[in-house]
Image (cartoon, rainbow, N blue to C red; front, side, top):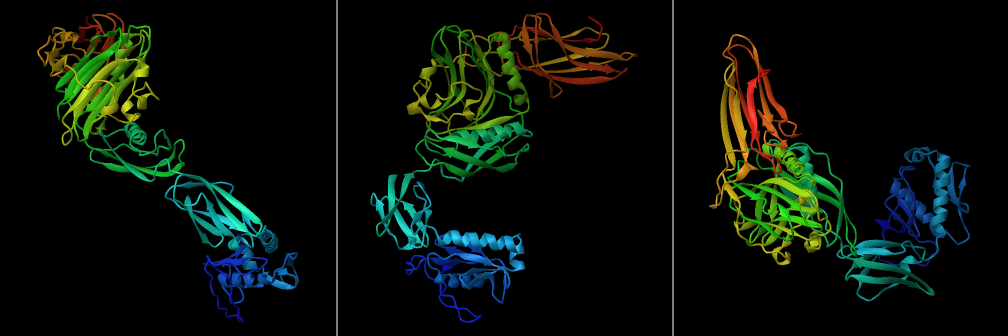
Length: 610
């Protein structure tokens, strides 16, 4: 506690502390103690760290304070070296510099003596009324201390302009300022003819920190990349802040999360919004891996009509049914002279929140439609086969974007996604797609009108602020978008053939079947055997037999590097050397990609035999 020394009687001293709200007596220096620190005219002059002469540090500093009561203007303290190293005021010793004290400060006795002497003299000669702060920024609801120094500073009268803007309480040399209303003003300090002002600005804070955000992922395990992506998404879309806030943060180091595992990541964050005070602090992002098993879709939502966009309008509409996963394929080319935005949203039309599990592959648009479809598959396929997904919350009566791509003339946007409406929440969630002009995108989403995984960058908006219809007619919905094919190949026998994209799947709503089976999962399970008496090498080869295509495959659980293939060009999927009597099982997964040409062919044969 800061207090003025009241009396010193011999070695045993009795200290009487003064409340800092009391005005000091008329003196040429206002000297207080704060623990073992000497405070002169509001400046911390010296701190004593060691005992000496039977007195502890706080008792020693009290003696120094008492000695300085006789200070008068024109006097200074000085270092005296004989007898003993000490600091004196006139002929009176103020403090002795001991070896132990110098060691406690990491200095030599001479250096410490000079430092203390300069510091005491500087504090003794500050102007009688001095404000250290030029302008004070205050946050509504949070008090702040402002130091005013000088020998007469604690006797100055305090007024506030405008009245009632802030509350000011004197705490020693500090003013405790509590803002009461937003705006600007000044605190006036008056002493005789001397006046000092402290301008202030009261603002609301950009964000109240700390906050805790919660997110869910899937994967076995959920990869580090997915965890980092989820942290970024939570910070961008969940953090409560003022409108137009900029959120800067450092992503912490992360590890993969196994199913059932939860972890809280502390994220150092700075939030700044125009007209609001900057916020600095920690945000706790809690991430849980809620599962790790594969999901096989019940329906395929096929959004390719029209493939060539010649204007704006609704492109697709579908309803999500609880716990009924669907696979979405989209593929659209801009055939107008003007830029278009292809936008897919999830609209929650109910009064409770919805949770949707989502895996997406949404690459940059491309001039080559086949390449666009291949890049979509290359982004989607590895995450889909490894169940690397995010749980997206769609608030009640709100809309969340899942695709937002700006395409100029002749560019094609193509993508694949799996969506699953989770139980326990809303049951009236729809998927709505539109082609629109860039200036028609909802205002809150205008800042970033193109990019992958927009649900990680753009906040949900209310259905009342979404300018497009969230109703429509379902079309191009196909049931059971998976084909299971088997084969048995024996060395020396007939070649094995599997045709991809030849047998169409049926419509789920009474329409025609799906030509080409684009977006349909193929699961090919086969067995190769060598019944002969010599070792033979068997190969499995994919051929782009119908034309230019992209090719993506998973063989026995391993995703192979994808390739673009010209007409009749082939790529090897599997090769094995079989000893006499040996057999191998093979599992192959693939998806016919948008823009490619089907049917295509997988051939199983003995290597070197055509």
